[in-house]
Image 1 (cartoon, each protein chain N blue to C red):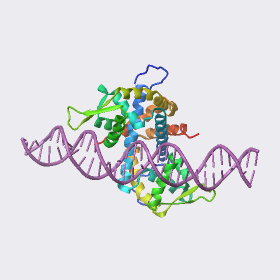
Image 2: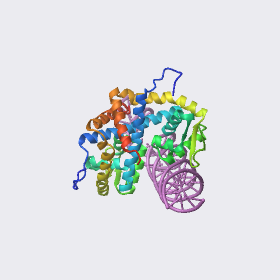
Image 3: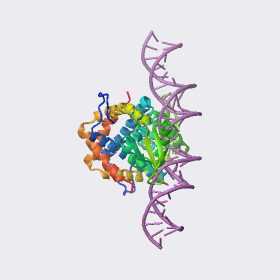
Image 4: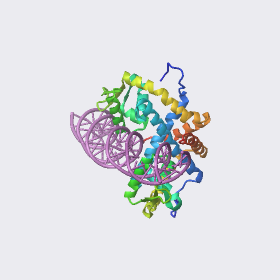
Length: 156
Length: 156
DNA sequence: GGGGGATCGTTGAATCTGCAACGACCCGAT
DNA sequence: ATCGGGTCGTTGCAGATTCAACGATCCCCC
């Protein structure tokens, strides 16, 4: 693309190259990780992420809004994901005592067991396709760069 | 997660931190870019990406399979995306002369005009949320890391 | 104590994507 | 020639995500 209106700062060739590597790399990575989880554990990536967050929380319980914010997923997406997890018996929902609007999501024992059986394969895939492909410095640089991106996009 | 079966190489705390920054950062970034495109240009990110690749191709034409491979999208996803673009008059499909199985996808003038009007806003968003948030070194490191990930996941 | 704006989570419809199966076609081996 | 495996792109459907709207609740402020 060229421009006749010259106010726009186009990307340099290298910047564009990096940006496209990012797009294609993330697409392939998500595809590979999602496929592995689905195949070996019959879980989607979002379901897995929800289970992980719950497993680390006090009492294996988290408010819906905290799940949504922590994972950067929309509230309705969390509602749908949790509904599926609940239908599978991996999670339970109950009203929040402190806040009448709130809903607490608790991981069941079955949910914990399911996560335990899924985690090794998933972590191995993350290693194979990401961690082991990069040097320690590269992974740290990647993490720091994406932290900056994340923080710059923290909802007002 | 802890482990009783000790064969699994779990991630260190820092590795996990980097990995989660990556997950959340990409989620927020894709969400912000997609929302901007949808709002200002009524295009999805995939539609935009297809138009960009076509705009750079010889005769503004590309085989469906090249679009799919270049963007790391599934073939059926490309079929669906191109069908929508064609319905909007931004793209035209015709049989490939050299290969009876193939389909050539050509960007129309309307498609090029649409891309021209969408590109400034999109590039500005990429700058705002990614490029301007990072130092040149960070962006290069990000690009190189994701290139390695991409190459490691090149389909056999 | 009672608005009024904001937050929380859900819902149903619309949209997007993946999956499995398919027909058409290519090409090398026979 | 043709057979067979492989590639190409599409299709219908199921699954996942977004979107807009909603009721319920909270909390600040008058």
